[in-house]
Length: 142
Length: 142
DNA sequence: ATATTTGCAAATAATTTGCAGTCGA
DNA sequence: TCGACTGCAAATTATTTGCAAATAT
Image 1 (cartoon, rainbow over the protein chains, first blue to last red):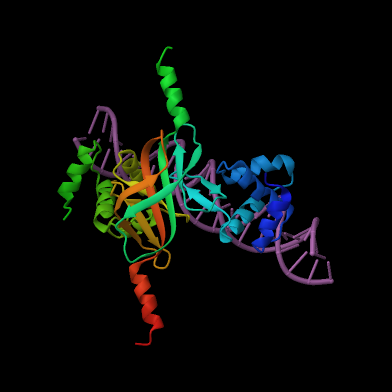
Image 2 (image 1 turned 90 degrees about the vertical axis):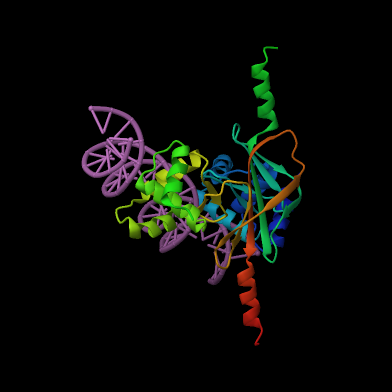
């Protein structure tokens, strides 16, 4: 689905070198779509790249952010998560299973006038579909 | 506008003691409405309360959060800001002057279905009205 | 008197920085 | 060969924890 070649082109189109580590980190983001933390990326890729350092993960995520290839998500907890989808969309975080779901935003009606808006971020928190149905399941003996 | 007495009642209504430091911290939040960081609160109140410690500021903000008297704002930068207005509303941060403005959200139209939403947070970033007009001012010789 | 709160100092965690060695066009 | 990239170790910053002293009911 996302062969190395494609990602390589993508990186080069952005004017950055396609080093092995960089390529793998970006590939991880677009493949997994799991909104990982620095640590999740580091741990997952360390298996393939045993010499990988966390600094490199930080370096590259920062670079991706500058190139607007990645956005950082800041929910109200002390971990930053990353998303390679930079189009405007909302993020829902389940406080039970900790998963983050993307959702589509059709419009936001506000009273803001005269401001130059450059970025929009929308975070929802709650319980996801799966956890809700599990909850129901445990309550009903059948 | 927010006399000590009123704030004292408010804290007690929430079931927490109205200690001097606690009262001052909460008063600062609702008076200034400036969405301060821990440091801003600490520095501002240190003048009046020279013995104040940052731990106490952290302790009380945490308590306020638990009691849902305060929400923490996480823009994509490494500082958390606090807001004593806990109703759902948006926050706009100017990347020029760093000020945070509140705005009203009438509605958000999304495709999210079947999820239990418990919290909504909306962050906009850009240039505020004031900074925009200054910008114009410097460009025009008149 | 007793429970809560405060505030210091130390611990922890996340991120950044400096820099020497490595890699690839 | 040269500049960019990596990765270690140390530094920095934000936040939390442990605990003894202070405070308030």
